Length: 412
Image (cartoon, rainbow, N blue to C red; front, top):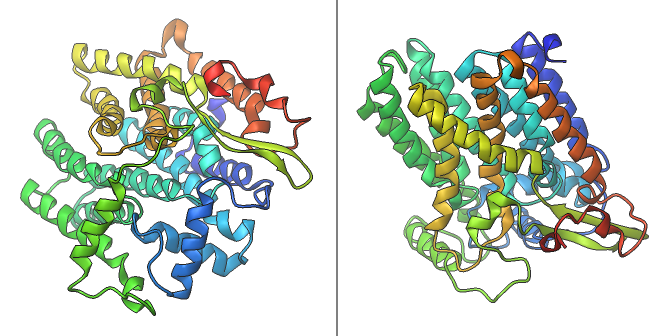
């Protein structure tokens, strides 16, 4: 299977086309607002009309993207969700680019992209108008751009690094949970530059940090531009910073207990997913379960340990850095001041698992283990096909049909 994907551009385009088609199929089902769409779609309508502030606990960019979809395709399920599919396809292609830049192996890049495509979390977030999908796409593309810069020469290095900074600023302008990645990028630059002085040739750490801070800050502030034109309670340069404090207060407020809440340490184990939808819709019982593909989530934990082991024992900094990317992305939830946690917060960390698994197979997939990566992908795809009906709001046989897929009582 992988032998046919020997050219990186052709492989990436093929995988991207499959991803976009898969995410887009029957996108308008269900024809009602699902889960947090009830917050973000109305807020996007308000933003498009420039009526005034709405859903002010989050920045504006993600809602502006949803509003753009509505403007292009109409105020309907296609308009609400169209750009979410594009964001998810960007995630899949971004994973491919990260692995290609790191290992220069089309096979490894394709394995990671296919595992990302088969991960339930990516598929579900591709088909719902929520902010997390856009935030994750910006972060993944930012990492890809910064790795691209590391291999550049001349002026291309600075421009590619600045592109990564702007993308991180856009991620923060979608959801604040992207903010830690600015710190990770700054630390990664110093670490990689120390190990490989030729990386980011001609770009020193002071200039890189300045570009990172200025580029991200400028992009973040630019996302608030529409708020200066509200008909009511418009932002001004004097109220822009106090507004950030108001956002923080909304983010950290104590919320009432929720049936689907779960502590952060359970997310990696796939213990408590979330039913985004389970009710009769469009004349039949349908469901959308935000769940991780067990092959990817559980296999990814083994891959993290394998990459850490190889990073220490074989001194392969690439594998160690990839494992630390997942660890840093996940561990931040242990300190973020949120009163409630939900499994969908794990969306971005779950994306890195496709990269970690592909990296582990790149390191260990030789000899007797030569084709284990393909077997692993086939098993992940098989699980995706099995669970597809309750990931995609397909027609189900009745109210108790969900029990067919409930491996554990905590999934119900």
